[in-house]
Length: 404
Length: 141
Image (tube, rainbow over all chains, first blue to last red; front, side, top):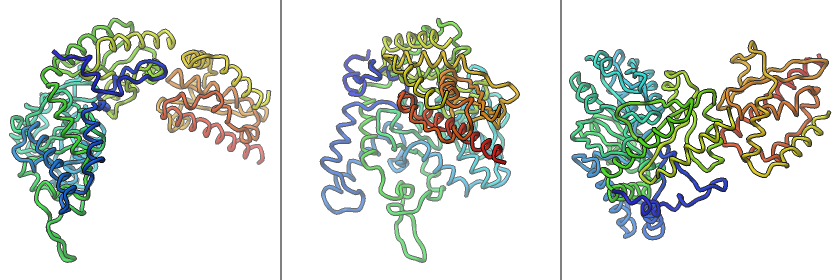
């Protein structure tokens, strides 16, 4: 059992007032809040050992390098990667996806096929469209049903020996659907395709074991799991990371440079050009420590309870429709009220101190699928409470009475 | 009434409210009473770029005065347009061009909108002024 009251004490921002009301932060799928334990690590870095890594002989540089590499090992262990150098520090999921998409440009040819799910975030569509434009490969879409679940029967039909890559989010940001990535990966491997799973929305709710999944690439962002923004990771199987060419040129990623030829550094540095977000990487590690100290099993159980309660309470509101009703979903509720634009609801909720996301959630294809301009999305984290659900429901009712 | 007078009237009305909930309620009421655009003018061309919700504005010249009609799929947005239209509709294009938009700041509209909506507000004002430029040129011709 989680002691939510005690947990909330870890997050200074949750004590804030917004528009004169206590903050109800229900936009966790966009970014999570940062506990004092992680803030302390960030402050400690800048106060005590801020230095550039991997190159200085001096003490501070050594300390920073050690902490940064320790963070890599924490991430490796958390996701159960076989080797620390299979973890590449990136600026976040979008960067990771671009890194892989860019690398595949040299491994893919005209007529090859790339599969993407219908419930992707824009960041998981555009890089592949660009890849296909560059190479002449064909982008195909795995459709979904009305509940917001992938049509696995169609997926199987789409797979063939021309399929080189499959990518799909582990959990949909707009709908909360947990996708059957295990099955997606297994089936892709039968035809020899590589799989990249976007774990941005999954990382705050569950622990992905990359070896058990046998996934080729997995990525997530630190800021969705109580870490800082501008930081994330890409896991890649060693054999795949060796096959991909470097993404960016610069310092850190080279072994030897002459004007005639440059040899690239070994993994992971081959993909880590320039001075990285050192503090961000270290804080990412600290965020995983924090989340693990709470415990992902308890987090999942508690969030499931919150989801169940919020779904039941919201459904009592007349004219409210929930989008994304997959059997297997996380604590995300996307909804609309008949006759009201989601922006209007969001604006009123904001005045009541309730932070939700409104709009298309960077997933326009999903909104087109449901023929709606967008939704209101409430997304819950382990530090949210049933009382906050009640505040949300009261807020929606208030918005209703004003807008209808 | 001149644009300046109407703007002062709007500032007066908004100063009567104690909190932003009341202002929102007022804007929603204004939105509901917005003179609606003829359906045939709700075209892609008439959509204002830069708004998160859809906003259509149409302008017509009547007795050398510019008359605006508009619509949006979001009601608070309609309220914002209603305020703008009240200030700028039924005015000579040159007067619309000369008018300043200080009153928006004075009623505190911008700071109480989300950044995306505030951008939309700027786009709306720009569009009204663009119409004024276009029709002013037409009159001069």
